[in-house]
Image 1: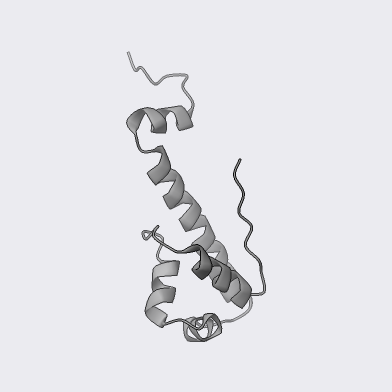
Image 2 (image 1 turned 90 degrees about the vertical axis):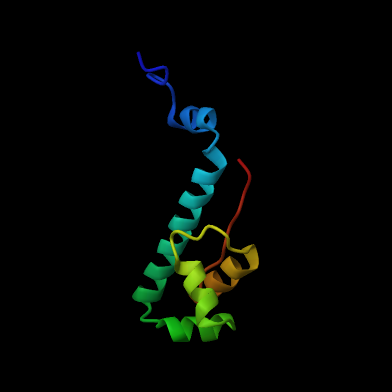
Length: 92
């Protein structure tokens, strides 16, 4: 019998000890996707985006890399601003 049947997915991830890691990766991927979609909608190239953020193309690449969940908050704020958006963070 599977001990995880009828358990929430969050509970399963916590039991496995990977909740924080999985959550961080999911949030980062969602943000990277939103930034890429905003760039595409506004026809902003990667080089133009890096210029607007006053950062290097390498740093922008790390931001847009869905497998890299190590990104600083100030970088996300710059990216949001560069596409005319703001970043909202809250604890729930």
